[in-house]
Image (cartoon, rainbow, N blue to C red; front, side, top):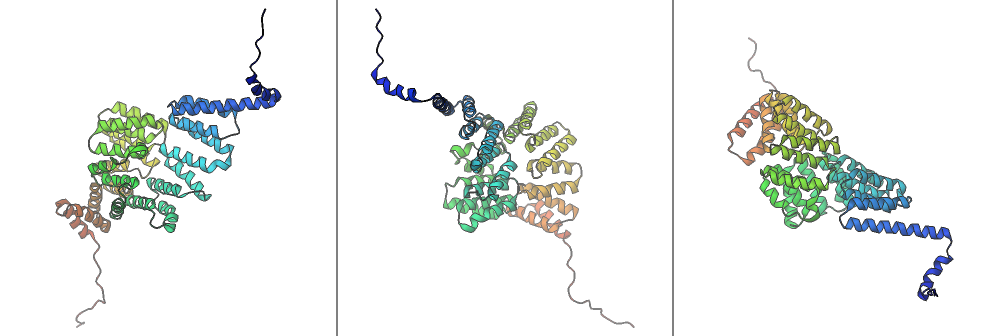
Length: 440
């Protein structure tokens, strides 16, 4: 004889609510539970270092709740961590279209993605949209001015910075960006004084230390730049901009293998950043590996078809192989994408001068000096061309005076200075002309 076990009395309170609800309510409740389960699953996977699986979970959650932005924003973050920037940007754009009220915050995230991929113009465009809508906070303003400076928009950067400087003239972060703009414009003395003062007052000011490292590198003091960068730790140290600066320092110090390892790790983290991949290609070339360099160039151009650095490195490979014409063409292509791209200008003027094209070399050098990234050697070369071509002696004298401050007894500098002084226009005699004697 079989006896049916009675249902535990404690389960009755749990079953009663379900029994009282209609099927539609139960369906909504079940869907919400599924959504929450998928969101929790995605968060756990993301925290555990599995962004691709997390993206799948968030994608399923987004399909279950097509009217909400939260799963799309989480999906964008998962794609970003998985290195799929294109999918991350697409998810953010979908979220922005879904709820325009959240557009400002989403645009900030989108601008950050663009910056990480080296797409400065796109990042600047989004921040300008926010500025036009009066939706920029102070940190956004500083970011916009910084990006504009990096993109060669110096006057626009100063204009962006005006609001903070007007409201808080002694704002430290604004002072750092001001020094950055001055350095980019070529006002190195003013920039250096401002940087030194800021670091004297606040030794832990990371942004000022990074900027001074860039100044040291530009001035040829890579060992001092390395010392400043060694003090940059944590999340800041892994940013593409800082990684690129470290790689430049290591390259100048001749430590190509270290630069290779640093950039390889960075590219694995930011696989859509064309500039980082192209820097890695440049490092491969410096180690004599032309095949690897060209393979990385193609990878960079696939990620970012308008990557000026990738086109420049392809030109460097052609130059190393002795094909000067194709090298000049590639440098030209790079400059079509970014007219202020200093590495291409730095190689192009040398090839022009070697070919006896001194007027063309002079124009290219002028463009390089105007970027604020010319070395002392390049400034001297421009002054020398002014002396040879007997043009713009006043500007040439300013450039050579800067060189003489570093080495006052340098015979080459003194000879250029002498030639430039001879090229100065003669002053006309002042006062009335007096004719002595008379007609006989």
